Image 1 (cartoon, helix red, strand yellow):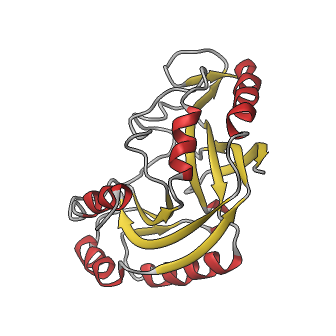
Image 2 (tube, helix red, strand yellow):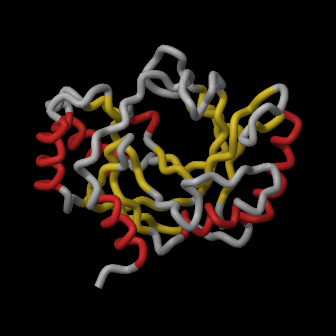
Length: 227
């Protein structure tokens, strides 16, 4: 019988025929509102075997003109979005530069209770904005997401716990051409296995959102090693 996380993933999968959300600009949209430096906690996907399997499957997705593949240097699993680094606070998810150190200090204390853990990457899914691989890790990343909500400078977001589901995105959308064929293909290959990786660190990064380019550049601000 499926557990809670599987049920949540199945619920998202059941809506796979809804039209994709097509990204036209990382900066000029209702989310970023012209801001370009987004802080987030994440886990890097740096296991060679996992990367090779993901890239191999991406080569199959490349046949569909609606797909925009993420490069391997962008491969990651989000743990918790923090907010936009700004000079003055105008939006609820703005974070002043002077408050970054407060976030780092509180995070160090919170993550002391977490140890290294293993992640299994299985099953394809579709999250409207991205094609992704489901993450199963005995709830570790979800619990980190919940714990980091205790950091006073971090804004709670709609996608946070209890709705939060860890995943590894491998592609976004540039149009909806042959989208239905893509979903047919995902249905045929959904039960894929991409391997396992050991998580021994969480990073706080600035995602530099491109105004005209296709992918953010990830700049590590701090690495939190797990015992």
